[in-house]
Length: 208
Image (cartoon, rainbow, N blue to C red; front, side):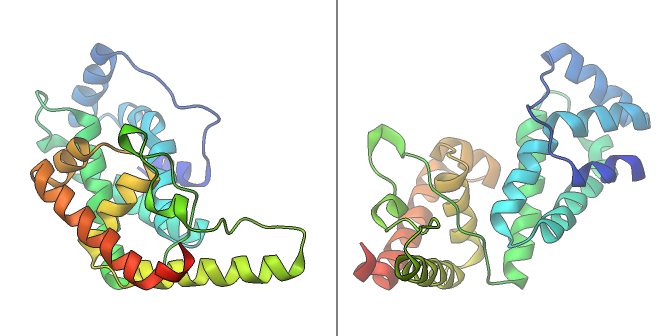
């Protein structure tokens, strides 16, 4: 397991791909206590897991801590994984729970650019001025202030609203997929996302 956790300091250039049969074989071996099989599974998913944790926290060091906590939980519980289920869904549910626990303890996040929404509709933060660095010092200061405002507003969401918002706007997941991760209905996720967006609009309305 120690060797697996060392992967936290490395993000591969491209995600590794496995066929369904190959992944199932690795899972079976990992469930039987094969550390090399578990490390191979880590290497398949480490990029996506680390990317998500990086978007939740401010620093790579904290992201590695969440990354390690995630895979430690997976390592300890993989023997209970039901082979008829989707391993990726199960894994990302573990990631989500680890991040939710973190968000309950912390009220900070690192802002990133949001992707385009479903049905071609612009996502909320696409209507907020870009906070990326600019050459104009005055604009740079203004952008920094916008970033601070956004982070503060996100900190006022409850952990569940914030994680749903993260998964939708920064991971680009569909509502149905988020519902599967949260073990709830698509409608519940939609309502949670609506509440989060309304709260952010109230706090950041002057920026839109």
